Amino acid sequence: MENSVGIISLGCAKNRVDAEMMLHTLREAGYKLIDDPALADVAIINTCGFIESAKQESIDEILELAKLKEEGRIKALIATGCMAERYREQMMKELPELDAVVGIGGNGDIAKVVADVLNSTKRELFPEKLCLPLEGGRVQSTEYYYAYLKIAEGCDNRCTYCAIPMIRGSYRSRRIEDLVEEAKRLAANGVKELIVIAQDTTKYGIDIYGEYSLAKLLRQLCTVGGLEWIRVLYCYPEAITDELIDVFASEEKIVKYMDIPMQHCNEKVLRRMGRGGSREQLAALVRKLRERVPGIVLRTTFIAGFPGETEEQFEELAEFSKEIGFERMGCFPYSCEEDTPAARLPDQIDDDVKERRAEILMEQQQLTMERYNESLMDKEIEVLVEGFDRYAECFFGRSRADAPEVDGKVFFVSEGRKPQPGEIVRVRIFDTLDMDPLGELAEEAEQ
Image 1: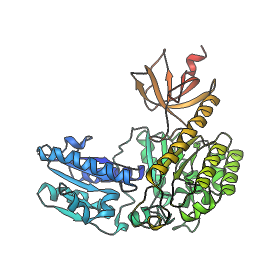
Image 2: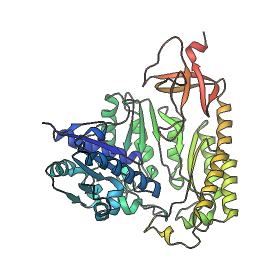
Image 3: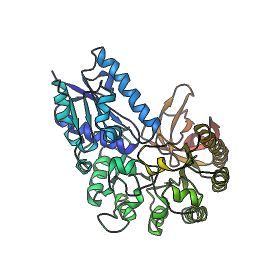
Image 4: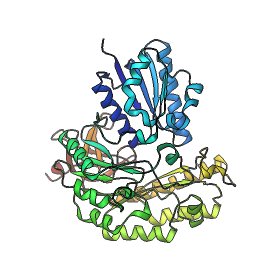
């Protein structure tokens, strides 16, 4: 009888792409793919190991599925992904419920590992990180109308708080021609929104072309038929070139939305973080972007309570965030990650102080969001339809200002027809619904 495999992928979209490639490898090897790992013979947990809360989520998922294994409903459990790579042999010792632990370099061997655990052979596999496949088929796990395109692997930035270079290794870009071919395949399968990702998208190409090449790649992606929105995430401030800004300003398919993880604005804190820039330089970048790309939506993330952050430095961050008025913002309490330089810094801050600071910034951001939503009143915006909310009794989707999973939704009513998921419609905004814009189908509003 055909054995079945299911994968749950935790953490970032980059990890999701790795899971999609493993699913393709498993399908090619003859395994039946199951959407819900709890219903499969073999459950794979593609773990996240970025910060403490993500690691705990991975452990919780493993233990939850382990109960089903104990009941005989699952035959075997496999851990892959960042946490498996980071903790290696510790995983099996601390979580004996696992039948295999596979580092990221072993993703290409996942079918053999599944065969082994089905034969009651436990496996621990940790090849070199460089063995992680960058090319290959994927089984798309997102809705059919949007997909992620991972343009590079690893990171060379060496931010002092971050374990990613230790887990994922050095930055490795993929070739433009390979990325364009993958985009064409995705578009042929119905993808309308392509979301370009890497640990740092703005560094794309520096290793293989000797220069920042994201702008060149985006212009090539804009030629792919069928794609309507191309969204770019994770742009680091110091590598946002004038050429890249010109692409955002001139290419219609490029969504006027840029995710710039700034983390802080105080120069001393930024240096302790291993990052460049200053409040003045970051503010100047924002002004340039808004002048040259009218209507651009800016997302950022901040870390509150980094070691040594004084009340005055935090207040400067709060002032900066309020002054800039980021349309989208997330703030996280600093997570002290073992083996990172920041974990060895003096003046570590109490958890309750870190959490209070993060809450202050997020409460302040609510006011910014309210002002942004007010600016949409009586305007028409494009919305990528995602479904119908039975409780709110209206349709919902995402605008160009909303990336999947991290931003909000747009809700809208439509009496005359039922827009289908994946359809792009125009919506006239007239109100808000729990901090999200609410509108009606524009074609009906005009009648």
